[in-house]
Length: 106
Length: 451
Image (tube, rainbow over all chains, first blue to last red; front, side):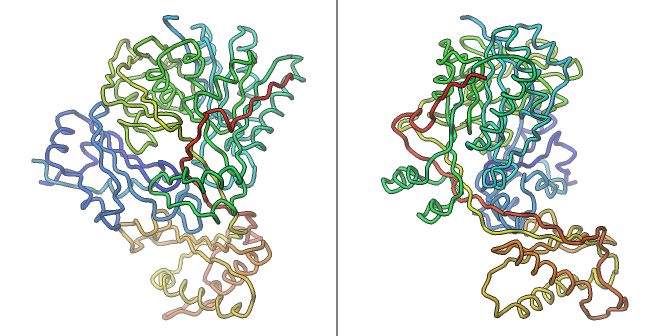
């Protein structure tokens, strides 16, 4: 049965990291699941690119941060913060697609 | 010195804090009160227009309480990124507030004012010498980007703040500043290792956001030791946990292990977080690795026009079904109507309920609600032309005929009269780059002002 990310994460959030980059943080509820997710490489650039409908090259980094049992995902901003066409100056509401993410936990 | 206590009252000067938390912090005899006053996060407008994104009355309230406590105890107050964006005009706003408070309360004190605005010629000179590079994914800098910028600030590191402290002033008021520098400066002056000091600054910069429940409008206290630091909230409703503090380390940053700043990188690969009390966390192993050459971050913006917006709602289900074609049709009508006019404009529609928040990143692009929020936005070279385009697009959309239309009286529900709002100047980031400098203090003049 697929596990929804929402069930195993304590925090899912997004923010700018400078005007050209969005940064998404997933902080897991417990260490064991965090390690299983990392070991199985469940959060991949391909999966995130598919979810956000962007080229894989726009997924700039996926970083596991052990001290906070967190995974960070950096995306190229489609439009720099505050430029015409931008929809979210602070980048604070770009996490929502992660709330629907589901995967098979090995 | 074996221990230094640093009080961070609030995440941004003007965001406020409970007096009870602040008093609790004062009871622990802080050696310095430091506060960050700005960010690029609210977007390019504030740096460009010279407007402060923090309200003067709210800033004055916070400043009055901080000054009263610090002057009485003879401890320094250090403020970074004054006025929000840290340009000269922003710095002057906060200096003006300090003068007002001083006059009102009959206080006399000295302020070390540190400028952070940098001349275009200086940036151009460095650019020509190949000393300016983009902070990825920002694009390469061009000469036009520099020339078109209306204001450029450089983010100062620890050194100019140390120079401000060295004047013996009661208050150090810095223009655009690396957020952790104001919290770390006093400690580095006293000989503390910049590793734990800068990492502590990184945690204190957003005040109690690093606690749980987090808040940017509440105080946090930092205890710095030679090899480590500890943090604790001052409101009994909050706790610092290893997780809340570690999680804050990755907040708003691209890489939680390596945090670059002016003059070096905070290396947190060996950092350990330990719970040492009910709501107190100890952090050790953080290192500051100096970089050579010394690099400053530049932030610049250019004006791209003026904006007018109209806000409306759509409830008709047939209209909602046809919305993309209607928008395309309105765009075409506007373009055709003004095709012989000698100006450029940009017309944008934000359709809340249909990709209004995520745009192209939206995984569910089809609308599934029963109403849509519509923001029609025009940006043009002058406010008058922006008004013209927005007004024309609004009236065209109001009466636009579309396939299956059954409601022929009007397509939009306007919540306001007037329906169109002049939003004024519009800016975009033009520079977000690193510049190599020979001297970290060179472009940050310090002036001592008696108020």
